[in-house]
Length: 357
View 1: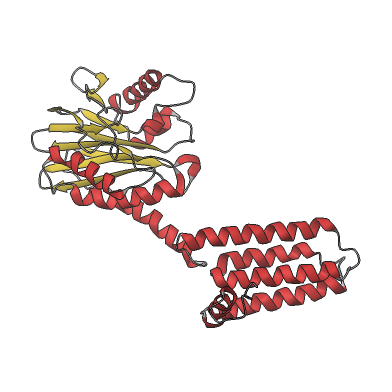
View 2 (view 1 turned 90 degrees about the horizontal axis):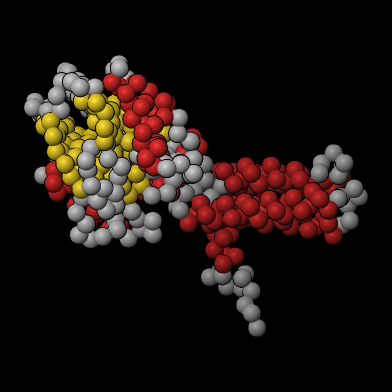
């Protein structure tokens, strides 16, 4: 014999009802349940004026303001009322609106379950996501540099989403600037959450280690997370703001472009790509060094600017170099102008950093 869910206080139904009764949202939940009951009576009395599909509005409100247990109670009440209306053979009650209500119940339960798995509860969960987005923006602020140095960045998410898997972190200590541009695998909210975690970790590593140790330690940190989509590409730049000496290291990232102000030549650094972070335990990043003279510039970018379906990567790089020539070499153009000039498709995250002496 199967035990009833109400037969013992440990049953799942008792746990749901206990959470409903004791939860701080019981007033809002009770109000929505009462509204559902009143609306059910209105449907039975005037089906022409009050279609069953009106329950969907209550379900949507509940999905955004109620927590998991209270949401289950509301869905159960709406389902029960719908079944009662069908069994009562209410006149003018068509099958279409009833099906819509059933599908809405399934969608709301799915949405609520996924939110519960992520630990997001009710309306405040949206505020938490906004806070995560804002933290990414704050962490990507660039430090002020002494004249004549200038640095700027522009990061755009795929399809204008709130979260981007591309991010930049920079630290200035005395006359040394360090920055890293990272492209986390994936896109959207999942990539944004991983980017937030890496941004905090990489920000702590910048300046705390010799420049040649930064990417190996970042790789070790990423491997320790054990993420299913755990890899990221990164380019790390160390610059002496007094002498202009620089060191660039890459972990699977496209090589930066360099403007030679004296000759007007623009090329990409002869930089081995290295292996992406989070793939191999002892991967050695590719590295090169040089000196930035007055007027010289480095342009860092993510693959969203140069990669596109059906287009060769070299073509994308050539296009970028042409934009750098027009926006950075001919005039003091910004990272925003470079990104806009490339006109890359918005189906991937994109980021540009322009560092000029």
